[in-house]
Image (tube, rainbow, N blue to C red; front, side, top):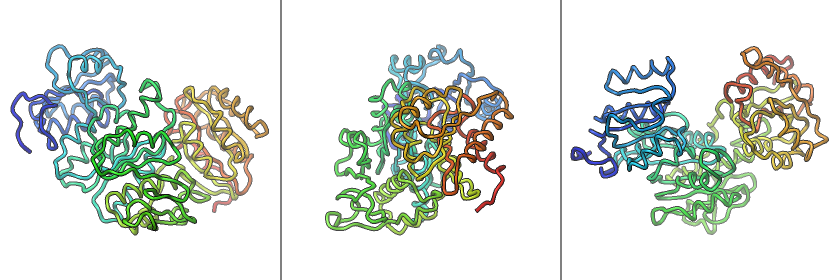
Length: 502
């Protein structure tokens, strides 16, 4: 890394291997990424000020660790309204939760101060011979795909890690002293909004559906943020053949000459696509004879452990996406197969909890929007659906219309049932509906009671061979602390059910 002249502006400093010494950096937000940015830049000679609107004891305690090393902190809502007036700021590194219209960020841009994400900073600071980046974004399926990719890379014998919106912050992984060979990056639209230079070896946009529109200011801006993951791609831009928006994002991307568009399909793939042929996942993109042949990667049987009735279509598509990125990096078909066989779904993501008296219980509490719930519901032929919560204005009609033939019954959570009851009355009026009395969920006991009642109701409505599925299609904040608590309480309620376990 070449030393930079003192006082050289952040955007004028050469990279990769950006030298941050002497830079006066303002870190906005002291979450996981904010801590990592402050830590990594302070170690390399930057002058760091961190601000956060919260001022809780736990936050103060974490701050003390870095204060000893020279990082300055200003905690409290009063620090969020404007740039600090007592110092010059060379660079703002913002946390993904901060909206673009936040007054301080607006003021920074108006003053000509660059605003970067942690991802942008990591890309610039990483050495030229640092790890390859394989990027994943989309409305749904990101975490499953990135952890599948990590499993495949490990089976190939590479030192690789899933990072970004899951696992390590990207800046820690990119600057790891032992050196990773590959980073599998899960990136949200929030992170991508503030990122200009990704330069992934290969990247995928899994799907696009309405989400976080208030943060971005509309569907077009949301999709454009997702599309940033393709900027500077070197080998492949991977898209979902069934989602025309993802194809359009590839067509609009500014990539390195020679980077190819690679499609994903659950049908028979054409050239430059990955897809399915008679239950086999195949590659017609990353082999020389792709116009006349296909490489076998894995079978649906290799994925059968991912669901009580085998892997659902959304999981197969996630597996194809992970395989495409791995193949773009030169991974052999054998490692793809072995990685998918070894992969296990994490908590709260279509997690099979138990089979009791022939009924399967599946926790997909992370299905917090209609598109995610639809994918989950399509994984089984007969479902007792536990749904409900804060839909944040989403339209539930397409979801219910699409899955009505799979529904055995619906058990409804949530303070406001109207969005669900209206959609069900229009498209599935014959389906039995049981609404759970909201009661008082202000305490732990009340929330536990609520989920016990929901699981008991679902059990009485289900028959052997059915799946009781928690896929709420809504946020949890109206009755639970977060989606994880909702899933944990569901798992606890299932564990208390009597009956014969398979």
